[in-house]
Image (cartoon, rainbow, N blue to C red):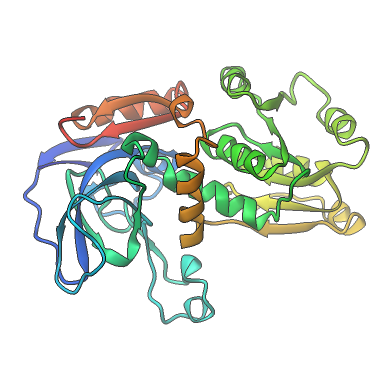
Length: 340
């Protein structure tokens, strides 16, 4: 069985590996597709070497079918189509005891802290597995994990039907947030400065704004009839976007911090005070977010085919990362199974 592992120095190595049988409480998944994301790119660039011990199989956005079942596992059958919540929590910390296992104080992530899904056979705990509808295309199902991120973000923003929503950042997660918000009945606008990405987002039928070409504050003010946005999502990770978020939100509006900011950012607390803004973080997802994501993708509320730029076979994973680095793709999938 083939695996794709990070070996350091911006390099991916393809290796043959004989998988173990699933242990008690585990299932083995025949992985069909794995999506690459910004986190995987951070891994390739060495930014997460403190958490990874090369060689490490990476990847966490996936779909596949159950290939084998360990002891003490019930409710699953070989051949069932599935995806995986790639989180591991201890169940004993204060966050877990309070019911917030997704932000466990000792949270570990598959594909980062533990081997991930860029392997033909992947053993995972049965409690992390999510069922997929029988007729759902597995390439579409590889988008469940990033869609679950967006669903969680939108829930944290308490987005309602009719809300005017500004999404700062037109990458895959920003676009998915816009589509999830639109599925609720909100009106999203995506703010992006990269012209190529802007054209892609616009081509998906979403309202867009380039703040380097248009007066951003004025455009949002006009669009919201002087009120400001009900919810602003900061997805870009830039310092300018943090200041923009407070400038664009309405009185008692909500700002959701989605992007990972590696250093502290300046924020306009006077604006937060004057408009009684609410700022919340959104880290990963909960099981209900995965269930909703599956529903959205299977009902075509998320245009999966339009979001998948390219499907690349597992032996060419290094090339796939090159495409991702070049910024030419919205979502690249790795065909892990050899017959894909």
